Image (tube, rainbow, N blue to C red; front, side, top):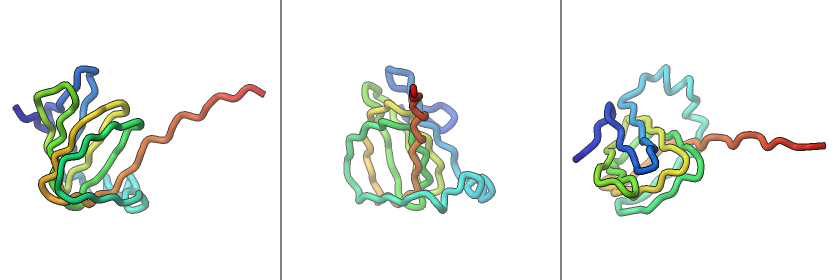
Length: 114
């Protein structure tokens, strides 16, 4: 069963992939995506673990992401803004080569004792 953007897939740990389809140019500008690094990959299957929250905007491509421990998947592609939570392990089944902007959540500043 596929999960839609209004019903994000949940892994056993309760982590959800959130997909915002076709965000406005204003929203993309507010996020500053044009200053984010770019990444791409060819079609294939990739096992990924996210050690930080990732927000990405797909310029090209199509993916079915299968969170570990779930039988459901989240599908996203060109024109989608996607938020992948920290701690999620999943398999990406890439059917069309990916080209995306991405940004990882900055780690919280460590407290220092002086």
